[in-house]
Length: 118
Image (cartoon, rainbow, N blue to C red; front, top):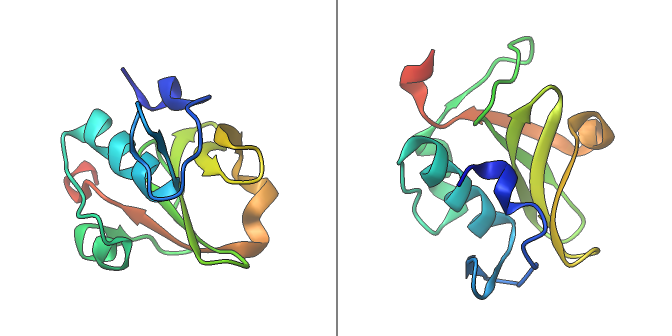
């Protein structure tokens, strides 16, 4: 299983498993584990300690974590490449793949979780 296989998984607030559904945090935790074997802690506020923040001019790569400011709370997504990312959307009740460009105005940070990929 890879991150793309998570598209279509039902959205569930606080969800951490495929069986119960995923929220954006559960999705990113699972995608990072699938891609790199790294388990992020459940508290997304400390994820930045597991990542190197990219400079604004650095290109995104597969596996980078996107941090967005949304109306409700911090929102996160997982970069697939080719300008696309996956995230769990409450509004459509599932994990979706979309272009990052659609959310550029609320993108606040990009983290390279597995920093030895530099």
